[in-house]
Length: 317
Ligand code: SIN
Image (cartoon, rainbow, N blue to C red):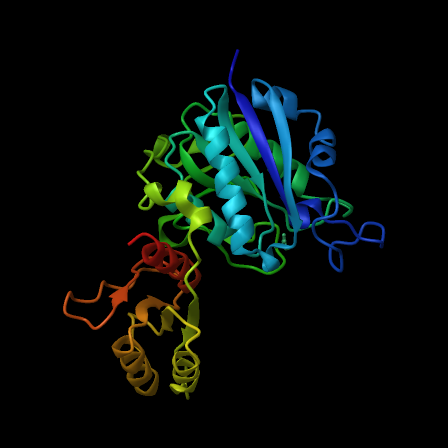
């Protein structure tokens, strides 16, 4: 018999409901249980190719995602991935911070098995909800023998954890994968991989950290934005208050910073704060800073993903 697919529910619009019949906006996220979401899609049994089991981890609007919930999610993924009867995991998640969770899991989970995040832009009570199809696609992808590592699927498009980003506040195809494009598509049935082949599984950068996560404090890492008229006041205030271990500077273009912000970051680095620069441009990839630069850089990562990486680096040293 094929392996089990485990579906972990965390909330989001996919589990959202509205008091206004059929409404697509003005709803409350994280209302329906994962068992209810699965029961609404009878085709899941066939897509899973084997047993399908559900576990409710949380019911949050993902704008309110916490480090504690991340820890629990990692811990449950580790348990299920170590179970040889499990073929893959699906995580239902809000769209708002899905890309951060995907990047976290990609960096922590030592697995070749697929871990597929899915979501919805419309609540379950909408006139035409997108959640049921997304859930079906996610389960089919998790049961796909070629699928490896952390993936996201929504609106029929498969994205990798590094590239996936929410690009639109309302559209059903809210996610994109930047210059590289998606990894594949769920048209009708099995996945159609881009370039006619599944991507290789990668080794997680902080795989050794996953099991220790609950024993460590999360570093306090904030994001500061370089913009017209920027100054160093926020950075100076954070450093003076002693409430920050790391700073991600969301830089203009190819990693450039307003001179006032740059001076404040130089003071922060001298005070022992870890500084990392990531471009605020949503497409393309800034060039890496030279080795003698005063701080690190995160080419190809958005500031929110660079923040996840910096936290993991600080925890893993
Ligand atoms: C959320 O992120 O939990 C709410 C928004 C959404 O899922 O689209």
